[in-house]
Length: 368
Image 1 (tube, rainbow, N blue to C red):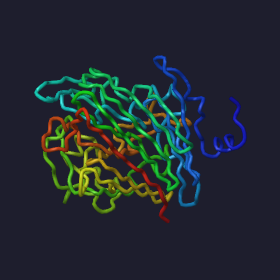
Image 2: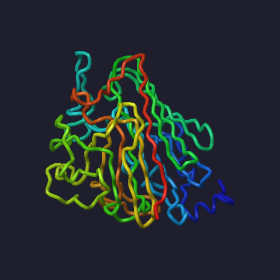
Image 3: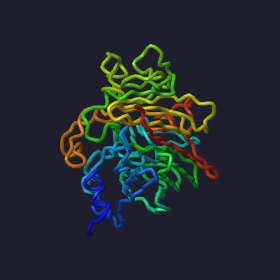
Image 4: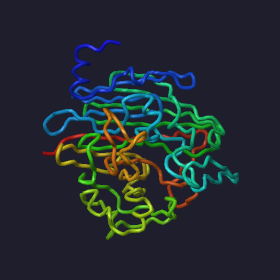
């Protein structure tokens, strides 16, 4: 396909990923790249392969657009790169201890794919599937997938839908819905890697982070929660006031050592479980970009990019840029890890006749 007019200009100015680079077939299903635009000039590119957010162009304090999400230039690269990068995660985000849980007196064994544990839905979860896609309008994309009973060991058939909307208020809104025909567990999130200075920049340690959370869930050495809900007060995990990510990341704390940096779930301050409320605010001074995250979810997993290496094949991204150690962060809105085995955590049980419904909003602005 020939690129003409404004498409050429966008490619030259902002490195916009070409739709053709993400066209193909996986297991007989068509893969495409979809573009969302708002009236303020923001642009998002999303593929129905794994529901990945591939690109997000956001203005800085000078009005210049820049790409703030890590990703890859083509479908082939995305298939061989960081498997979670930009993905829609399900049927269960984060870890389940030993891949085991008991539901209504029956024991279930899930796929083990992270040491001795189950992570992000397993080896054939939504990170590896092609969603059915329908672009509803210039600003809205709907993705659907049908999780079959027994996939990765989960009970129940589960119909899942996620809708991406790029609003005219410079918000990227992600909404999830799910229903089941048999009792099951669900926990969905998006696993975008962010750098508000621009993807490919060296570090996120100078980003200023605030979290609306006074407690976190400490973990064992396999990153499974112990069940304790611990205060952040007088710890490196206190982001109740704005702090640079790198300020305390090197402290000799057992929890930081287990994750080789930040890789924990924070307990969000909530008036009610369904409340759409502020979870976090991130500010990057050079660009002036601010990202506020609002969610109906009770938890927020903060990951400081400790596993990025800047090396092939996983961590060479768009335009050949190396994605190095701590050059991006993830803030995953979700229920708590290992919730099916932790009775004091918010429940992830979904019964027939119930709807799972969840909303997360990433709102962008600038601060001079």
